[in-house]
Image (cartoon, rainbow, N blue to C red; front, side, top):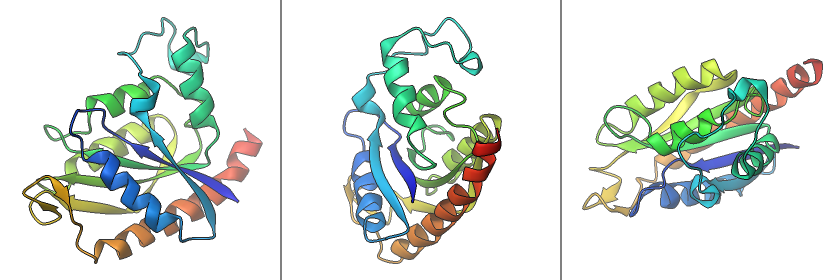
Length: 187
């Protein structure tokens, strides 16, 4: 069975990403085709990238990097839950991604974005980043509006129709995660 990490993509005080990620986990846990686990980047307390050697070399010198690498290596695929800050993903998520390389390679990813435009630009930003670290991103995504899916732009109250979008995205992430297991075995 494939293992999918649902990554909380913000460390900001008052963040909405954890609540959104918990909602995704609740939907995912009803499935029997994969194991799903929440991964909160806040738990790793990653500083700004402080490794002296490029991540592609795989020579991590810091304990926080080795812990982060071990956690990410456990998964066959990911769901990135991202806010949209200034037409991109959060700096904290981009930083967390940049710490590693091989641990991301030949795995699948889906996206759940939120923001004034449903997080669409943050998702597009992450698609570019994922291509560079050899993550296959799926087409289906979930876009949540601060205006319609959050009461007063703060309390998360998603429209029930989004559950179908989550299911469609998870279907693709699980399928691609399975398919890419063979690619990783050949590498």
